[in-house]
Amino acid sequence: MSVRTKSVNREVAELFIESAKYILGESKAIPSLSGDPAQVNATRKAIETSRALYEALNDQRTSTVDAIELVEQKKIAAENFRKITGLEWKL
Image: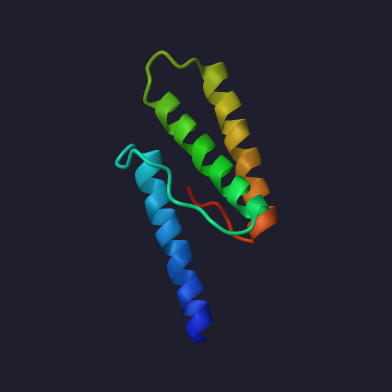
């Protein structure tokens, strides 16, 4: 594995760690994103839909219909993230 590959892997791991903290509410700010606008938008959407689903599942007022809709939105965002970045959305 090249030094460049290790650096990219470390950056991806850090992105997922920071994203998880945001999704779980441990961090108030969405992770800082930069680079290709399409990748930034796909990543932001995956993070935002994951957080919306997490928050809804922790809210007793969320209906089953609402939860299913949020799951579908998250699946779409995760698939778009995969298509644009080549990475699987693990959150």
